[in-house]
Length: 577
Image (tube, rainbow, N blue to C red; front, side):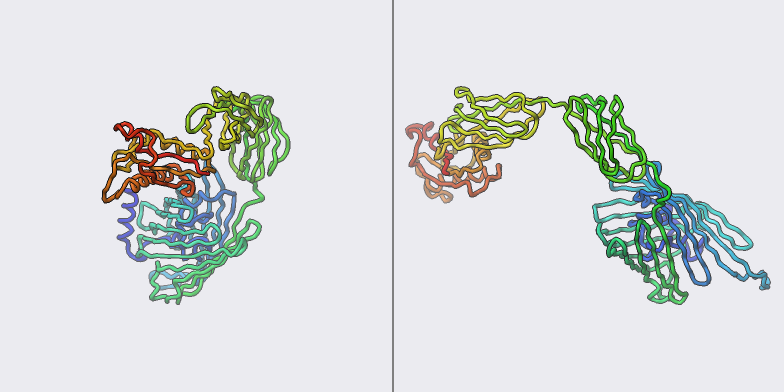
């Protein structure tokens, strides 16, 4: 933060044209230049070393970059760089050489001294690295040289950069460039944003604050028609005075051709009255210099994490049959980039299938965890949903194993031992044909006991939701009613084909209020509140539930006492279909 405030202070105090080393201001690469010199957030190739070193983190392969800039007044620039992965990130080493031919030299007395060829250059190294999935940071060091005939200048400077992905489409970036102890170097601060469509479209915007000029804005757009052709265009408001050079001097344009891992870029940039400029570059992977990689496969017991000797069958970019060491290790080198598919076989373990993606360079580790087959145990109990008493039932199960069993008719329970782990489908049918069969999916874990209760309902059965009672003249659910209602919800979930009527009842005392003109409206309201609770809490299809009020026409207890009348203020659960 101190560095940013320091730079912003000095950048705001500079005067136009007061710095040396104009080569440090010349944008590198036809692609960024064609985008209006807007690249700080998009930077994703080897030219990021000039625009924002953090962008180097997105490079992976060993690659080269050569570029030629054709300026007016016989000025030519040549830029060469090479990039390579290393130290968990990516390095770029390069430089630009600029020459001016046939410069007339005059002394202080205005006497000609002859013709000279002058040159200047910038040489540097940059490094970028991803700190996490969304943030990349970068750093660069450079040395600048300028030949002024009578004097030669040399200075050093540094770059700092960052890029952050806000989401899959939006990236922001910032760079402090040419930081130096002297203000003779053209320092600047760039911030930018990029909207990218991952298939074929990039839209970029930069703001630049230099120490020897005014703040200026630039923007650009890149459209990739296909894997072979890219078109680019941009506009910039500075650093020169557009009003003097002409409005067309703000526009930039360019094209990119891609084939067989190589890219040829061209940029056309007019400078109004000064003339036209051209940039052309070729870059791509150094296929003749192959990077090295390694893959270590470690086969282990999944429970103890101890190594296990195993046979491995590999397919994909690496094929063949291999044997690990006695501690489960296999080391492979110089594997083509791509997926390696692994089948592992070890004595006493089931076959294990896995895969790993291998990059062209770097170290890769893949752990294969093998688990011995430990059977699981399942214990079930079948109840009548209304009486909560055990009933006699027949059970069919299908999964990694399959079979059928009858439960104990008195206890209602059954036990399945030595079940291979996995997902099973259970079909439970009551011996009484009035019971509606129930089906469910149950996961059996290795070496564990799994238990489940089955509640079967009868066709046209009426279940009193005991504990779901209401205050006199009220239709509000009490907290103590939730246990019984949750049990009803479970029955509905376990029997997804049944349709139910929720019947509301009252005691005989007549009620006449604005909300409930009679006991009929009150009993219906009680049924409706139960229906809505089941829909909201258990996500039950509303079409499976209907509500009906019966007032005091169907008592279940004498209405001669407060206790009896409390029992009659109830809601029932009736199986319709």
